[in-house]
Length: 486
Ligand SMILES: Cc1cc2nc3c(=O)[nH]c(=O)nc-3n(C[C@H](O)[C@H](O)[C@H](O)COP(=O)(O)OP(=O)(O)OC[C@H]3O[C@@H](n4cnc5c(N)ncnc54)[C@H](O)[C@@H]3O)c2cc1C
Image 1 (spheres, rainbow, N blue to C red):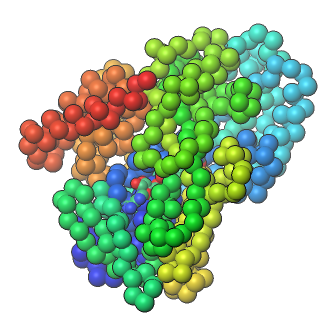
Image 2 (cartoon, rainbow, N blue to C red; image 1 turned 30 degrees about the horizontal axis):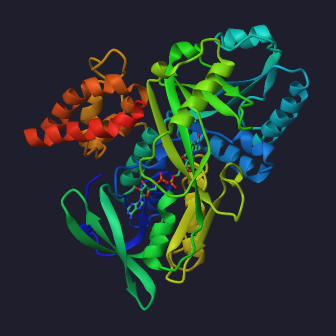
Image 3 (tube, rainbow, N blue to C red; image 1 turned 90 degrees about the horizontal axis):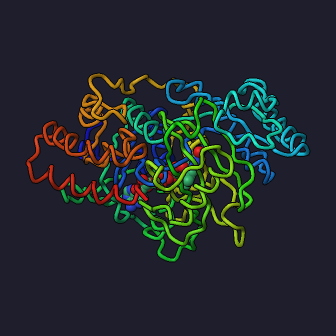
């Protein structure tokens, strides 16, 4: 994955944004044989795409909202992703507990619909369990008045890891990917976009990148990019913050995830084993602006602790939180609909200047979003007609192996993991290494701050950098990490 923007004079496809949507667009375009470049202003997946609930799922909460087509599409994508990348997307059992008899037929109906929408090749069909069976799987679930639970299966992944593997697949198929490079304006000829001006933020250099098609895949920043093209563009995005807390495994022993079905805001939340920790989330709070690095509020943390306390036998307190993080959902606006009810479906549109914007969606449906986007460019006559290939192309297995001695007893990572990330995965900063190439910061903030000086020394060594660089990296990361420890 080299910076080689200067080597090609004219690209077929220029993608703005290196989150789930942009990376899938770049991979899709490259796989069809288009000369493709992706430009990301920070690190890959550093905005929303590293802060999800880490599920590849249809979304049972969208069933309740009657969004059957979305659920069907997402379940179809779940099957594709677990087929082409089984080392990155795995099955996870969930239990939906119930405490009142009348809830059983209601959940039964919903889960039968979920199984139906997944089709005959979906995950195993749901089944109901007796309270004792539920407690065998989830010994730390509150047993008082438990009537039973519904067991079903969905998909789970590591979002930032998937993003990097996707970037590697795109690079393998000749796409060029730039991180820390920001698109600042468009190059136009007679009103039509013919490229972008971008600034390499590390070397402070401006570059002109010319191409046939420019795709705006900038998630929550989509309106900002649209306004670079057309300053009077009406906003199309709505924003909703979702937060998570991370607890030790003792709060949910076993390998089965739980759904907290009835919280006091009417939503449900997940409690999921993840990298030997437990992830609890998420909230859904309307917010008025996009932020690369949002943080959970005090109220959200309280809400999540209360939710866990409502359903778990051991009630977590603030000092039990190992890490807390927030992301902002890129939702396509619909007048007065509250964000929790806004559809997670996506939209592809093309402007007068031929800027193509793809917005909305979910990690689960990002492959399909990319397919629709490149098809849209073909439909508009901007690209040669070549069929999408991503749904059948297996990912190469290039993941980490954690070889060597662990740097900290509370974390699974070794020096080798960081070396691979620096040498082969375009990690440029200590934050890239600790927040996304590994998930250290998301698993345990305190332990991560303890290993930060050692990892910074490796970064300095492998990048042949100065002592001042190392010290600055430690300082920047320490400031960055602080809000993860509420
Ligand atoms: C709390 C939460 C939980 C979620 N859980 C799930 C889940 O379990 N499963 C699921 O399927 N989905 C989930 N989602 C949804 C999913 O995470 C998002 O739909 C997806 O990550 C959005 O990806 P994106 O690429 O569109 O946006 P982003 O990841 O935000 O990427 C956009 C990128 O564009 C870049 N950019 C912006 N401006 C410029 C510029 N001028 N130049 C260059 N680059 C630029 C940004 O830096 C950013 O990296 C969740 C979302 C949230 C918030």
